[in-house]
Every structure is written in structure tokens, then in C-alpha cells.
Image: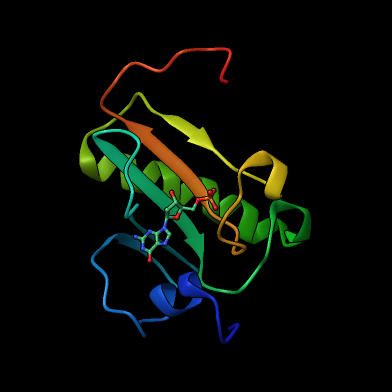
Length: 111
Ligand code: DGP
């Protein structure tokens, strides 16, 4: 837990948040600034700054499983996943999270 980290506070219940999905190590909640009709954030409870700092293989697998659980729960089977890693990639919150977006068409290549 990192004192000034908003996602630590959400993931550990200090800021009341509706979770789409939760297990022992991962939470999934809706992005405050949605870029699609459905925009979820898949977040480990433990503070990990970026994907570069993720060294736990079990937790890595749990994050992927949480994507599946949350999308299944919402009845979604087409979606885009994004992990912004570092400032130049667009990362603003330095607590690892996977964006899961659905409900509209997405273009590729991404800008
Ligand atoms: P990124 O740029 O990849 O670090 O994405 C951070 C996302 O986090 C951004 O889409 C907005 C979202 N966000 C920031 N603060 C909060 C918050 O307090 N609550 C929720 N639900 N989402 C937040």
C-alpha cells in the first residue's frame, strides 16, 4: 500500500467504490473518465507502479483471469485492453492497471 496512491485507496476500501469484480488480489471497477460505453480498470490490490515492476507470475495470470471474469459478468465478449506503461505511453496513475473498453468500434492502428 502506497500512501498517496488513489488506486491503493480504492483497491483496499479506503475510498468506497463499486467493484464489478473482486477477488483476494485483484479488483475491477469503472474508469472515472470513460473512453467507451464500458470502461473498466483491472487493478492489483498490491501497489505495483508499472508493468515493468510486475514480477509475480501468479498475479499476472490473476489479472488476465479478472478481465475474463469481469467481462463475462457484464456479458461482453468483444473489448479492447490497454496497459499504458510510463509517461510517454500515457500512464497517469502509477499503480498498474489494465484498461478494458467495450461498447463501441475501435480503430487500429491506435493513435
Ligand atoms: P492511465 O492514463 O493509463 O494511467 O489511466 C488512468 C485512468 O484512471 C484514467 O482513465 C482515469 C482513471 N482514474 C483516475 N482517477 C480515478 C479515480 O479516482 N477513480 C476511478 N474510478 N478512475 C480514476
